[in-house]
Structures are given as C-alpha cells and as structure tokens.
Length: 437
Image (cartoon, rainbow, N blue to C red):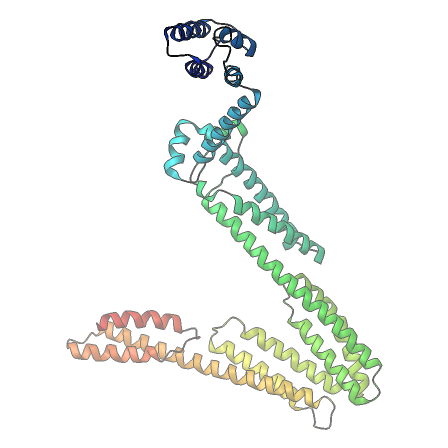
C-alpha cells in the first residue's frame, strides 16, 4: 500500500495549483511541493495522515487550504468498515439474485444450469422435497380423519388437514415435474416419485375430500336443525290444548322425520340420523297411536311406505328392462291399494291422500317408462331384423336399397332416450346414416 493514493494526490495537486504564483519563484515552489507529493505516492507504508500532509505543503505554501488537507487525508485512508459491509451486502445480493434467476421456472434457463451447475438449483430441490413431504403427510392425515371419521370433530380436524395439504400442493413447483434432481437426491435421499400422475392423483384426493367435508358439514347442519325442530315439535305437542294443535305438532314431527330421511346416508350425520330415526319413528308412532286410537291406518301408511321405498329402490339407476319396470309398477300398485283402504273419516286420511297423490304420480311415471322401454325394445328388434334381412338379401336396385335403409333409420329414430335400447339404436343409426350418404 502506497502512502498517498491517487485521489488524495489529485486533491492536493489541485490546491497547489491554486496557491502557486505565475513567476519563477511560484513555479519553483510548485515544483518542490509536487516532488514531495510524488515521493509520497512512490513510498510504501501506512497512509499519510493530516499532520504529515500539512508538513509536506505548509512550509512552502503557508496559505494552503486546511480543508483541502483534511479532504485529502480522508480520501487517503483505507476503506471504512461500513464500506466493506456495503460491498459484502452487494456481493450477497448479487449472488442471491443470480440464484433466484437460475431457479426461475423457465426451461431455457434451467436446463443449462441443471447440466453444468445443478447445485445452484438447490433451492428448487429443497422446496420441492419439503412441499412434497408436507403434501403427502397432510393428505394421509386428512384421509384418515375424513373418510374414517367417528365424530364431527374428526371432520373439522380433517378439513384443516386437507387445507394444509392443498397449500403444500399449491406450493409444489409443478413446472419442475419433468426434472429429476439426481445430484440432490444422491446426497439427501429423495423418497418421492413425483410424477404427473401422482401429482394429479393427490389433487383429486384433496378435491374429493374437500367435497366430502362440504357434504358432511351440510349433513350435520341438517341433522342439528332437524333435532332442534323435533324438540320444538315435541314441546308443542306436550303443551297442546286441543286436538288441532296436537295434529299440527304431529305434522311438524313428520316434516322433521322426512328431513332426517333425506340426509345422505353415506355421511356420518346420515348414519347418525338413521340410528336416531328408528327411535324417533318409534316415538312418533306412539304419539300418532295415542291421538288416533287406531293403529290400523298407521300400519297401512307404513306398509305403503315400505312398498313405495322398495319401488323407488327398484327404479334407481335407469335404464331398466321392461320386466324391472313392471316389478316397480307392481310395488307402487301395492302401496296405492293400502292407502286407498283408509277411509275419509279416519284422522290419517289427509296424510294418506298426499302420499296417494305422490304414489300415483310415480306409478304413472313408471308405467310411461315401461311402455317406452317396451316400444323402444320392439323398435330396436324390428330394426335389427330388417338389417339382417338387408345384409342377407341385399337388393340389386340402388333405390330399393336406399328405401330399405330409410325404413331402418325411421325405425331406429323411434327408440326413445333413457331406455336400455337407446345406446345400441344410436350406434346403428349412425352406421345407417353413413351408408345413406
């Protein structure tokens, strides 16, 4: 390190020029001081301080600016600690910026880095590993709590775990699924498969559990509201002053029981409701028996409901063959016949009529479906018969062929949607229309 650096020399040289005069003496004085300063620039050692710089110039130029001497002395000192810190901060910021840039989700940046300096992609690997492990962990916890819940508290806790799993999945660098961090996994023992299929499967599981939580919460709300309403209805019945008020309370109980019946049975609240519904219906039956004094009408209604329930179950997930629609029709007829035995003067007549109207409507729907099924099946069979005949004995005349084909198409179009024959009829119709072109 030289005793006088360039910046300090320039400050002092500028002031020397200001202090020197134009005559020969002034030039000589200027030359003497400049030689001294040059000598300091060539000497190695500790930087010259204020006193040393002052002694160098004041004996020749007493009027030399003290301010310039101090500025030169300051400029001549080694960089202060804050300057070093500043440069260190700049260096760290620069390095951080470079690492951030190379970890951006752009293949044109990442591929060259992954091949030449994969260590720079360490933040991406660490993030992927941490988020992957977190997602797997929370998905499993949520699955255990939600799908094997034993209480509403399990559902609530499972919902929280599912949200955490979703956060980790959202933080996973999906754009990096195509990369395999071999260098990182070699040192840190990665356990992930981390494929597109696995990632999508985790997302689907989280989505399904989120939907299940929503369904469970709605079902639990229905159960809570129904139980509260049932308590109010029981209180109204106990405090009823006449038969009319008792009938109103019983009607409220029936609404609650219907609500409990509608709670999805696959939910925890639905299973709880089904268990409680047995006791509620037993109590409700006792109440209605005490009011009417006649259990026959109640038995007829319950029997009708049993047949109606069986008929509804038989009718589920159409389309069905005509034989199954006939089975459902027979069950609705059995339910209706039992309701028709309840006389006008009996207290449960109004309830029976409401059920009767609904059951007759359902019966009509089943009969329509059975008729549509029979007609569609018959039309499909006729079309198949005509197709077989056309294939076995194809007409030589082109117009006759088109006429037969038109008849087949017309027959296939009579097959109605929602029947078991519809899908096959549509396939044959498409084939026939292609041949028609």
